[in-house]
Image (spheres, rainbow, N blue to C red):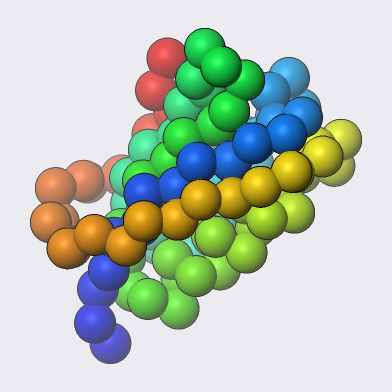
Length: 92
């Protein structure tokens, strides 16, 4: 299965609801690599790399978020797979 990369921005009530931790846990479970972080403007930014189906599952999760989140929008940019990550990390 081909590998892909997606750069994602999630807006709404997505900080202070364990969004980053849930994202990391789900990515680890799906074998997706990359990172997630909070932005100063209140959004969450993430980069996902892995098999297309698993990355699409991560994007679907971002559209819902964890319990307590109120996702208003998700912007997805598909990029060329780079294979630069060994794990999925939370960036601070």
